[in-house]
Each structure stands twice: as C-alpha cells, then as structure tokens.
Image (cartoon, rainbow, N blue to C red; front, side, top):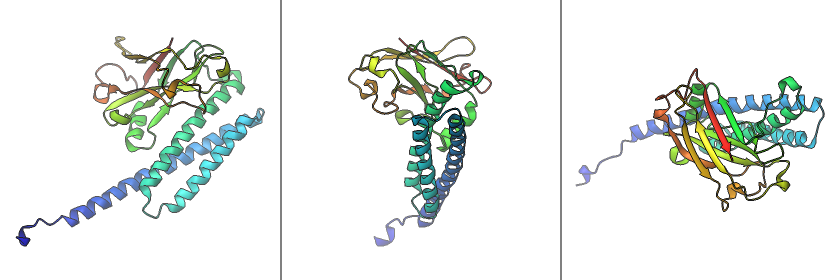
Length: 269
C-alpha cells in the first residue's frame, strides 16, 4: 500500500514558488520606479507652490512626502529578503497616500497658480472627468502598479460639500479582475462647518458613450448611517459606490473608449 501513496510533485512546486517570487519581485521593481518618480514630481510641485508663498498645508504635505521617501529607502534595503508580499502591501498603501497628496496639491495649485494654469473646478455638483491613456492605466492596474485613480475635486456649490470620484481600472473587491469599479468620495472641505451632516444627496455615476449616448448609469442615495457620509475627520471618507459598475469585457461593446480616452460623469443633487 505504501508504494501506491501519491508523491507530491516537488519539482513542479519548487518551480511554481520560484515563478511566484520572480513575478512579485518584478512587480515590486515597477512599483519602486513608479512611486519614486511620483515623489520627485510631487516635490517639484511643492517647491513651485512654496515659491508663490508657503503655507501650513505645504509644510504638512512636504513632511508626508519626505516620510514616504524615507520609507521607500528602508523598503529598498529590505528587498533582498523574502518579505516581498508584505512589502507589496506597504507599497499599495504608500501609493494610496501619494494619490491623496496629488489631489491636495492639485487643489493648492488651482488656488495659487497663474490664472492660465489653474485647474477649473466644478461648483454645481457635476464632475466631468476625462481619463486619457486608458490602455496603459488599465495595464498598470492589472500589474498592481497603480490600482486606483482619483478625480480632481468638485463641489456641490461654491461654498458647499467637497467631493471626488475614485475608479479602479481592473476592479476592486468583488469586481477585481472582472469589472470597472467606480466610487464616490466625500472629502474634507473648508466649509464643512456650514454644511448639513450627514451628507444626504442622490449620486448618479455615469460612464459616457461617446457615440450614441447610450451611457452606463448607476444611481443611489447616500446612506445617513454610513461612515462614508458623515462629516470627514480626515482628508477623505471611505469611498462608496459600485465595485461591479461595468463588466470589463463589455467596455468595447459601445464607444465607451474612443481614442484611448473615457469619460466619467458624476451628478450630485
């Protein structure tokens, strides 16, 4: 009987483990390059803001970016051991922090930059978000280089709620790998003390058809019991929306993507 006991394929298992480690290391290398590049870009933008008049927000953002840079140095030094999977998680968390800082800096630039370079914000509760280089960004999401994108902020009124959208090009949660995931985010704003909390609005999220106008639409009312719609205690509340917004294999059925560009529209009323 002993001779009939199946033996594990140790050679195959060993090769699979080696392949997994190689794949993780390759992904980490791409993430290191991507994050360091973004850090450099953010530092340059901060220097530009400081030259036009430094403020507390600038100093805070600079400190956070420097801390992220120090963390990356530490992670690089540890890359020779076998902690790649934990490191990958840390890189994802830092990428999220960088995305938040990018939104903050874009906001500061819109307030301080030369008029011709200012970001034009919407103050009527409507966001029209143009996402270029769709194929590259989708591939970055598949590779784990950058899984989520944030839109520029928009507002319910000139002195109203501050909000943004968040998209996962390769899905998130239940939709990971199969769907485009789209979310709505309530942000901390300068006039939150004047707003009514919890946030109670209807949110309509749209992926625009650039041909026949056959848009993909999902609408919901904010849940007053959800932490996503309470007054923000940090820069952003937890996102709320649809992890199963659009099947990825249906993206090319209509003209949702045209010239490698897609448009997301959010209406808050």
